[in-house]
Amino acid sequence: MAKIKKILIANRGEIAVRIHRSAKEMGIQTIAVFSEPDRTSPHVLLCDEAYPLNGTLSSETYLNVDRIIAIALKAKVDAIHPGYGFLSEKEFFAKSVTDAGLIFIGPRSGTIELLGSKTSARDLLSKKNIPIVPGTTDPIKSLEEATKVAASIGYPVLIKASGGGGGKGMRRVDSPDELGNAIERARNEASKAFSDDRVYIEKFIVNPKHIEIQILADSHGNVIHLGERECSIQRRHQKVVEECPSTALTPELRSKMGQMAVDIAKAAGYLNAGTIEFLLDVDKNFYFLEVNTRVQVEHPITEMVYGIDIIKEQIRIAQGERLSITQDDVKINGHAIESRIYAEEYDNNFLPSTGTITHYQPSEGLGVRNDSGIRVGSEITMHYDPMIAKLITHGRTREEAIEKMKRALREYKINGVKTTIPFCEIVLFHPEFVNGNYDINFVAKHYLVPDAKLTVHESNAIVTSFVSQKNIASKINNGMEAITSTSKWKKQFRDE
Image (cartoon, rainbow, N blue to C red; front, side):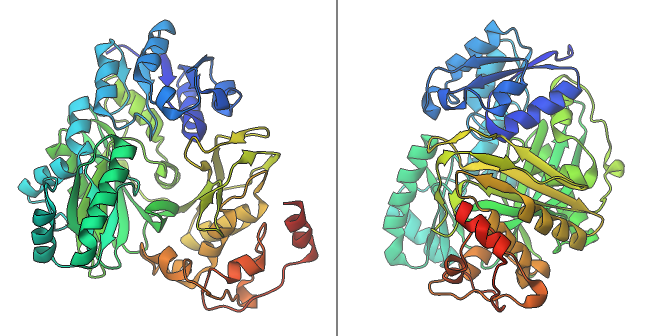
């Protein structure tokens, strides 16, 4: 296969910038596409060429397959990289790209279709004796069927969208009386999010950890894993803080889960980069959850720990090259943490925050990485995902990575919208996070608690920048005693 010389990036924000940077380091030209609100966004200004998508809504811009393909042909690109979200896991987009004579930088369309349906993936892997969470391997067809299944596996159960992820179309059900309404609401939400209202049922695993394994597979039969990421700090099933490696995995368990991920990739005939997600219960039993057939949002922490540029590997695989590394080359080097920075009112149930960025000063320093899709003047609208940047730190030890993140979060300045930076600070200081003893219920347990009281030990003093202590006190309970912010930070509160 010929070398890729020109790539169209069918995405926006920080991931478009991220793809551009790796491509340029490989001597590849980059093409940006943009909606009207993104006309002066960083990815547009950085790429070699940029073409308008003529619209504002996702449906008429970043989800417009015909328009994107037409631009790719006009710009005479060799390949299209979908990033994550939008069209990245749509088999029809991958097929449209290859049908147009272009290279799709990702899995084959058939693999995306197979693994994109959670039920078909569960069915395939159950036949391969891969442990899956108990539940259905086909979409449920009626309330009567759902009632029987739920009774057989036991409450609580989860209703989940068959054709998507990210918490959309997902409902927890604790009793038979809630089942019918939960199914209806999940179907409606799944239909709106994925144009697919199919849902299935699986057992709700109590207090699990969310562990995912990064895999890479080339067209020469080589499949490797790059260890795990711990992604249990979530709100509304969306990750907020991630780390690599996980404190829960021993070397033996890491090897076992990694090999399981490789086996799953081989069973599906996987090509390119992907992520195999698992739930890990309190007894260290793990269950297959789903496959994400794209690059993950949190891929930078794996890159920091293992020293491997996943985007570059994606491009090399897409142009027919072998993996540049073997499994024996994959060695853990230190620890990394990622804080996702969302434009959200974290003290108001994480509602989106819109506005114009009036001041932006990201953190810097040794072991600090900032993946961002914003600049001063960027408009944060309701049209797209509220994640605007990712802050990543790397240290020789977990403790060092945590301390770097605390410092970097305090230095990070964004004016014009509210962000989740203060919430990430709270997580970093919480004893359960510090001890590594947390699970996917962390936010519900410690944050979304009515009339909870925040207390902070002076020995662990956290400067709660950008937020009032009153707002924090109404939301968090982490067993520490409150302190007063300095006058310097009080001035910053007023400026915000």
